[in-house]
Length: 201
Image (tube, rainbow, N blue to C red):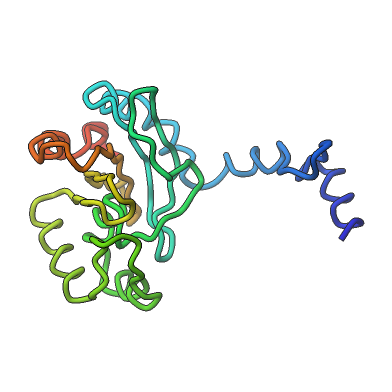
């Protein structure tokens, strides 16, 4: 193990500090080369617009396997404190970003999520496949997804997808809001269908 760590340190993949080993800058550089780099570079102006409208957290995310993978997160001092982080994952079936993307996936994509199982994270998590399918049908019909405390108690969110040209992948910013926030706020945010659609991504 020590020999492996020494080799990883030599090429910059890990960094050795006084309190142990940490990921190195070389891994950060590799991460910036992933296929979603262009999306991450194009999204900030539109994410900032959503933040200015809500002063809440705004996410850019994609679905990876059965999970929501958060590519970027924009937050502020007045934003609700939530568990998500850039580079982190949460189950797609219980997040607004995940459901907004699952609603437009082919049946095999949803089958992969159901195959992993729907674990209850809060009292409001949808754990029955039939109910999740119904929720995704409603999501697709209205054009945006809503998560009412399904991933984290006290936190709700809304998200809308934006599909890239010639790609089956999609991304979705999600401004979470406290569960006490009026439903109208979520409706106004989602009605934009994410302004990134305006530039064709």
